[in-house]
Image 1 (spheres, helix red, strand yellow):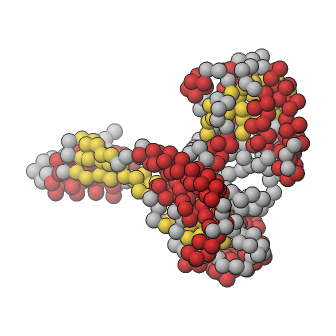
Image 2 (image 1 turned 60 degrees about the vertical axis):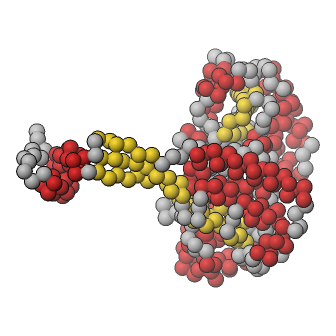
Image 3 (image 1 turned 90 degrees about the vertical axis):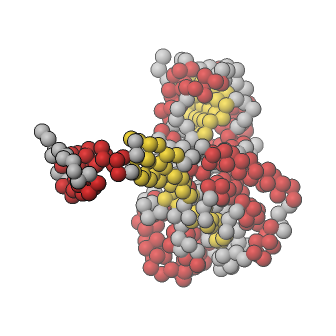
Length: 435
């Protein structure tokens, strides 16, 4: 049977997209031309902050002293999990070499970017976990310099827990500046910072647009939209747990889609009954976000088979994908398009968001169809090299000369010819393009 929508979204993540491009482009142009002074003007206007921009060791220590020990312990636990998982990921990137033909060896090397800029949101929420996810992975990758950038609160500065976390995870400098001006400062190397080779981390639509515009002159992790989550559930799922997980992700923002895909209509109906009750029990800001997201962006879909459920999930390509169903190995083998996968009731997206070890900077808006999330790999350049003996270069030079002439690239062909004539002066070669 075709999909049955018990609840259909009235809006999508692109429905309220405003054209911020011109504004962000203007800001970047002015900041690049005006340097530190212009960035400070924007900081005073937008952040409403005129305190220290680059935090000193004493200022970091003072902020860290304000963080309760229990929170420090939790941060250390999460940092250790993320660090160890990142180290395992890095171990999968090996320098290799292969003798392509006798005497010709080609290889690859993984080289980290020299300078990384890590943006840590600090608006509605203090995103401690984002500091862990971005700075830790850059450190494990081996980036030579790491700047952590976070928006300050008026007359207060960056939240002490973010400062403590960024320092613990290995940031070399902490930049107290938000939004486009913060991104620009890291990109253009303001305030004595090295120019960033790559920008990572989540942010609002202005931060995302700044990264989009700057991509090319710097690398970026991805262009992120509103966070989204999908749950696949069968008759074995607990409707209260399913509803709780949907609401937990909907609180991210008014335009954060959450989707339930199931082959059990009774489960779907029960979840839809529970969700409004859970939303009503949240603190006001969280509840307002979740209510709007559920009302306008959420969908509940009933499929006939688990294969149809999986196909639906792959089509949506969610940032976060949860499976609360039997036969988890089948789902792990079958599912292909997601940012991060959470198998079974015993884990949840919130674990990945905060402390379990996998990264929470993930592809949104169906970009999981072609990319994964932030990892040590994002900071690494895979470069290639080759060397050859004279005998090893011979067959390659002959093929290169003929292919180049067939393509009409005579200069390339002569680069190959020159080596053949120098290394093998007594031999005759047919280096014409042929028919």
